[in-house]
Amino acid sequence: MDKTSDILLAEGKLLPVMEEFYTLQGEGYNTGQAAYFIRIGGCDVGCSWCDIRESWNAQLYPPVETDGVISRALEFPAKAVVITGGEPLNYNLDYLSQGLKQHGVKIFIETSGSQPLRGTPDWICLSPKKSSPPLKEIFLKADELKVIIQDETDLCWAEENMEKVKAGCQLYLQPEWSRRNTILPRIISYIKEHPRWKISLQSHKYMRIP
Ligand code: SF4
Image (cartoon, rainbow, N blue to C red; front, side):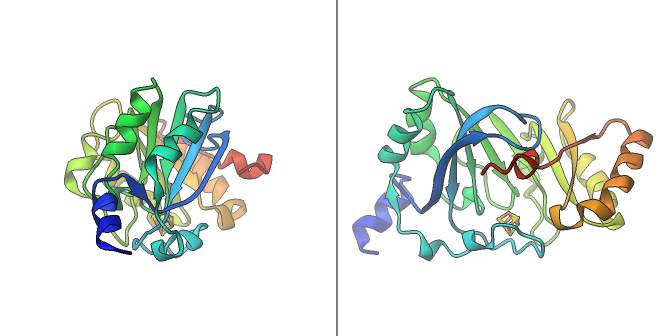
């Protein structure tokens, strides 16, 4: 990448977008809502069960003009965008956020919280990962805490994180997809005992949509 591209990337006018698609949000608080997904490449969090490993290496995704991403998002009727990854907070999202908001688009971000918050999301879904825990500052900003559960120890991890979020933050336990049949009964019984939590299922996978 030449120096000009480096500057444009730092300014958020270029982003290493892995894929863009219009679909329904499948998980968490906004489940069922139509939205334009922008998946940004690059993640060094290293979750063992990551189902989007092809996102990890940002070098595979040559940066594209953010203006073009904004234009494509605006072609769809839902005025909602999900920014996801990878870890989208590896990049400057201010320019993308401003461009979308000028057109009244709501921005939902999915993040591990391992990097400082950038951009101006309307909804922050914090999905903390043990291998690279969230920065302290994001807990009080998160609108939703979504913890992936693959075994019993993750329930303790969920409680640890729950103690750090603000009042009113929506709390979700989500079965890790490859272990869903094993872990689902335990999550159900846990939520019945601890009803501050709700379940999040990856409904897009059941519906076989992106
Ligand atoms: Fe995969 Fe997300 Fe974990 Fe990164 S934070 S390794 S993209 S699950």
